Image (cartoon, rainbow, N blue to C red; front, side):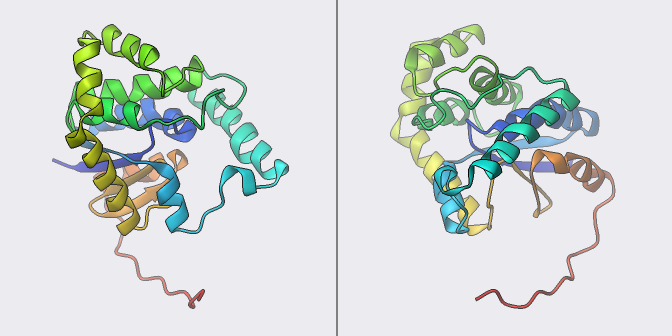
Length: 212
């Protein structure tokens, strides 16, 4: 049975845009989807990526505006027309809500999608326990118990280890999908992900000069 390791942050707009399509691919190809929620800033920093505030306004407006609008229209995904109001809030608890359900399975799939959707469709604050509790309740979970589990040392340690794993595997953004160890960065590469599940790509043989 094929496996996809899904590396993403719980507040990622592009992870949201690709979420339904990813789940469709997994269902049609009978794929085991392994969720690896991460804290994005350490991952980006390790690859010397630019923070939001270091980009030009034109760059932000294109990659975090117009591109999102077009992909949302193309994938028929409901989305707000601005950066979520509390996008920079702490989303470690929201990440824990995914991890607490296990790394794979229908409930984990639903939680990941529902958190992303709440943030990007409803402008939900992913650091707000009341908002997170409502999502848990809507899924039939006991909100208080699940939030306690999500905040536990064990679950938050898994989040830390996922982040370290992403850094050590040279992930530089969310979402990234690994198929048999081969990374595909960005929801716009889901077509290639689907192809790789059926017909693996040839091993990489590209050589670049050093950037050091």
